[in-house]
Image (cartoon, rainbow, N blue to C red; front, side, top):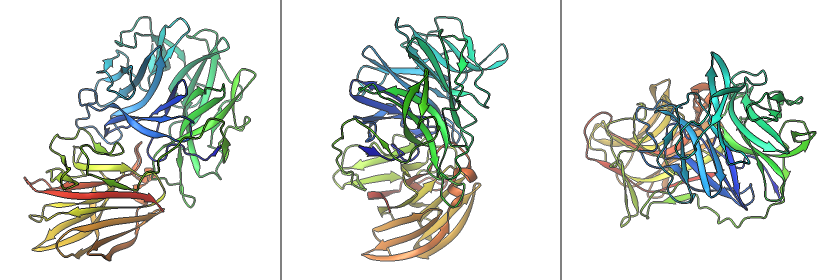
Amino acid sequence: MLFKNPIIPGYNPDPSICRVGSDYYIVNSTFEFFPGVPVYHSKNLVNWELTGYCLDRRSQLELEDCRNSGGIYAPTIRYHKGMFYMITTNVTDKGNFVVHTEDINSEWSEPAWIDQGGIDPSLFFDDDDKCYYCSTGIIDGVRGIVAFEINPLTGVILSEKKLISEGCGGQCPEGPHIYKKDGWYYLMIAEGGTEYAHRETIQRSHNVYGPYEACPDNPVISHKEYKKSEIQATGHADLLEDENGNWWLVFLGIRRFSHALLHNLGRETFLAKVEWEDGWPIINRGVGKLEDTVEISLPKMQMIPKSPIYSFAQDKLDMAFLTLRNPDSDMYELDQNKGVLKLALKNVTLKEQASPAYVALRQRHQDYQAGVQMRFTPGNEQECAGIAVMQSNEYHIRFEKYLEGEQESVRVISCVGGKDDVIASCKVPKGDMILKIVACGQKADFCYQVCGEQVMVACNVDIHFLSTEVAGGFVGCTIGMYASSNGTKSDNYAEYGWMFYEQI
């Protein structure tokens, strides 16, 4: 079977992977979004299904006043003797912690906090069942990778902290993982910063604490010099041996638009085949970059085609939906009888570092169309509801229904650097309507439909400001339903019959 990257498209950065028999699991960073740390399952490393989240309760994931690209950084998932462990950092809360579960499809434990600074924690279980922690850190004023023995159930530190590596010469050594193979301990880290100079390096030692020697062919993967590829910023990797003894690397990368060094999708999850030569992992025969297609010998999965239409005629939201920070209990309601999502008009807006009424999907393709069926009657000129494409609080675009005088209208508003600009507006008839966005690269059209008639509101709108290169941050664009009373008190709400998203 041949496959093409990415294996998990859209904003799914910092992948970590583990295997239990013939089952494979990946987790990713979620930053300011809730729930936190998605769990993807696969039987063949190619087809991945979202099956749940590690952090789905506020007691596990506090995101109050979380800044853009704050919150959850770089999780690691490991399995040892019947127990799954996920370790990560909440930079908005108390730092590094670990949760565990015996059943990955059930709830995870409450956090066990770890008295260690830094980010990107990882766990390694040695042959004697001792568990070692490693992350970024500082000892005696020297910055690098810190390691020590730990109880993974309680977070209690069981040994002296030691600096085991300062990296292999690149800036920002981070994302460490320790492995053991053929009597060697391998320390793999990301270097170069998580932008276009990103890369992955590896070192080895006969002792878990070092000293570590660097691979003579570092970096093992990097696209820094591979300018022709639309895939860039490769790094932050995790190694895995499959059930047949083959080795693989999952890692993050970005897909930039071919005409410009811009990307809107955030960092996605990629896969590369690994071979071992002279005791070192080799990617793409030592070239250190992705092949266009890779053959994999694991079985095909029977995947049920997913409808592009998300219905609300059930008792809970589809797992694909995210909210910003911790959602209030009354932010939304699913009315199964009417088959609608009722979104409260909260008094906060998308521009605030708060928890707006926003229920969103990840943008997964460079060219897509998305839309919602909405029933909403604004009660005053402050109330609005619609659909938005969001990179951050300060960089997003909104397509919303509102009241202008006594006339119901729609408008397209770009928010750039926190400042709103009305791109287009028009009056609309009362009643149910469909709001639709069609985006091709860095341009987008906005139209509405009432009683089968489609009306263009704005076309060929420049949306390059939604790129990470302009907006900054570590996430990718999300597309979602939102409602706001713009700082006023309101009991009003918007009803959504469905939302759709598909590649074009």
